[in-house]
Amino acid sequence: MYRNEFTAWYRRMSVVYGIGTWSVLGSLLYYSRTMAKSSVDQKDGSASEVPSELSERPKGFYVETVVTYKEDFVPNTEKILNYWKSWTGGPGTEP
Image (cartoon, rainbow, N blue to C red; front, side, top):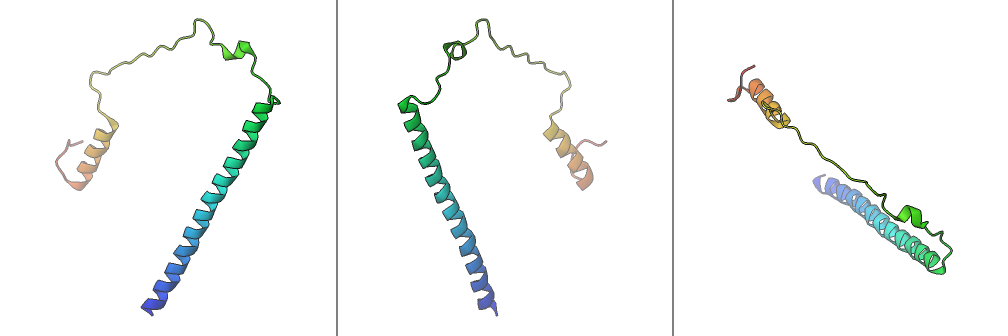
Protein backbone atom coordinates (compact mmCIF):
# COMPACT_ATOMS: atom_id res chain seq x y z
CA MET A 1 0.00 0.00 0.00
CA TYR A 2 2.84 2.39 0.80
CA ARG A 3 4.39 1.94 -2.64
CA ASN A 4 1.09 2.70 -4.40
CA GLU A 5 0.63 5.90 -2.40
CA PHE A 6 4.14 6.98 -3.23
CA THR A 7 3.73 6.40 -6.96
CA ALA A 8 0.42 8.29 -6.99
CA TRP A 9 2.02 11.23 -5.18
CA TYR A 10 5.02 11.11 -7.52
CA ARG A 11 2.77 11.19 -10.60
CA ARG A 12 0.78 14.14 -9.23
CA MET A 13 3.93 16.11 -8.51
CA SER A 14 5.30 15.28 -11.97
CA VAL A 15 2.14 16.69 -13.55
CA VAL A 16 2.35 19.86 -11.43
CA TYR A 17 6.02 20.30 -12.31
CA GLY A 18 5.33 19.71 -16.01
CA ILE A 19 2.48 22.23 -16.11
CA GLY A 20 4.64 24.83 -14.37
CA THR A 21 7.59 24.25 -16.68
CA TRP A 22 5.53 24.47 -19.86
CA SER A 23 3.77 27.58 -18.55
CA VAL A 24 7.08 29.34 -17.96
CA LEU A 25 8.47 28.29 -21.33
CA GLY A 26 5.28 29.36 -23.11
CA SER A 27 5.31 32.73 -21.36
CA LEU A 28 8.94 33.32 -22.32
CA LEU A 29 8.25 32.41 -25.93
CA TYR A 30 5.18 34.66 -26.07
CA TYR A 31 7.04 37.54 -24.42
CA SER A 32 10.04 37.24 -26.73
CA ARG A 33 7.83 37.24 -29.83
CA THR A 34 5.77 40.24 -28.71
CA MET A 35 8.93 42.18 -27.84
CA ALA A 36 10.41 41.33 -31.26
CA LYS A 37 7.28 42.66 -32.98
CA SER A 38 7.28 45.87 -30.95
CA SER A 39 10.96 46.51 -31.71
CA VAL A 40 10.28 46.05 -35.46
CA ASP A 41 7.38 48.52 -35.23
CA GLN A 42 9.60 51.10 -33.56
CA LYS A 43 12.35 50.68 -36.17
CA ASP A 44 9.84 51.28 -38.98
CA GLY A 45 8.81 54.55 -37.41
CA SER A 46 5.16 53.57 -37.25
CA ALA A 47 5.12 54.06 -33.49
CA SER A 48 4.09 57.52 -32.38
CA GLU A 49 6.91 59.67 -31.09
CA VAL A 50 6.77 61.41 -27.73
CA PRO A 51 6.52 65.19 -28.07
CA SER A 52 9.59 67.06 -26.89
CA GLU A 53 7.49 68.91 -24.30
CA LEU A 54 6.76 65.69 -22.39
CA SER A 55 10.29 64.31 -22.57
CA GLU A 56 11.80 67.32 -20.77
CA ARG A 57 11.76 67.61 -17.00
CA PRO A 58 9.57 70.32 -15.53
CA LYS A 59 11.63 73.21 -14.22
CA GLY A 60 11.62 73.83 -10.48
CA PHE A 61 10.53 70.29 -9.64
CA TYR A 62 12.08 68.86 -6.49
CA VAL A 63 11.34 66.42 -3.69
CA GLU A 64 11.66 67.28 -0.03
CA THR A 65 11.78 64.63 2.68
CA VAL A 66 11.03 65.46 6.30
CA VAL A 67 11.95 62.95 9.00
CA THR A 68 10.55 63.37 12.50
CA TYR A 69 11.68 61.35 15.48
CA LYS A 70 9.50 60.65 18.50
CA GLU A 71 11.11 60.82 21.91
CA ASP A 72 9.75 57.58 23.45
CA PHE A 73 9.30 55.57 20.26
CA VAL A 74 8.94 51.78 20.53
CA PRO A 75 9.13 49.82 17.26
CA ASN A 76 6.16 47.64 16.31
CA THR A 77 8.31 44.51 16.38
CA GLU A 78 9.27 45.27 19.97
CA LYS A 79 5.61 45.77 20.90
CA ILE A 80 4.63 42.43 19.33
CA LEU A 81 7.53 40.66 21.04
CA ASN A 82 6.60 42.10 24.44
CA TYR A 83 2.95 41.13 23.91
CA TRP A 84 3.97 37.58 22.95
CA LYS A 85 6.23 37.29 25.99
CA SER A 86 3.44 38.48 28.29
CA TRP A 87 1.25 35.58 27.09
CA THR A 88 3.95 32.91 27.15
CA GLY A 89 5.36 33.91 30.52
CA GLY A 90 8.78 34.81 29.18
CA PRO A 91 10.83 37.76 30.39
CA GLY A 92 9.37 40.97 29.07
CA THR A 93 7.51 44.07 30.11
CA GLU A 94 4.43 43.47 32.20
CA PRO A 95 1.24 45.27 31.12
